[in-house]
Length: 134
Image 1 (cartoon, rainbow, N blue to C red):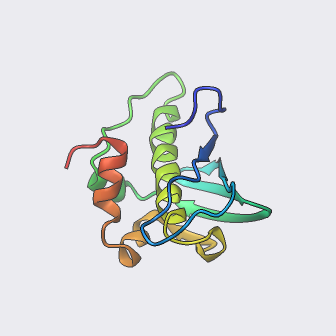
Image 2 (image 1 turned 30 degrees about the horizontal axis):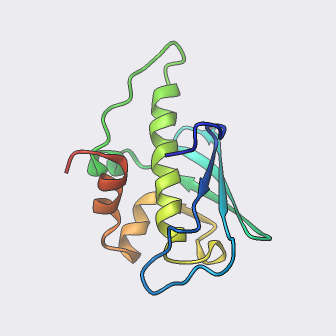
């Protein structure tokens, strides 16, 4: 969950969140910026140390259903609730990936549903991270 003082579009990932077998050296933090590009499509910028990577990701509805995220409540904007739900999934998905590989190893363009092909524990990890139903 983003720090309350951090704008909604940014998330600082603590350097203590590293996968088993990896050692955090020095003070390293990642910043993830998410920009809405259209229906279910987002531009993601990851700043990791002195490196910056850019990614274009899509969020398939089937993945939202599989993870068990509740349906977005529509507001006067009609799509705002869905975008916030998708952004939460993107933030946690990138945090998950960054615990396992450097940002430079993350594909430049992909649908979030492909993460499970490389990391079978992805969907269950997202359910846990997002507090979604199993």
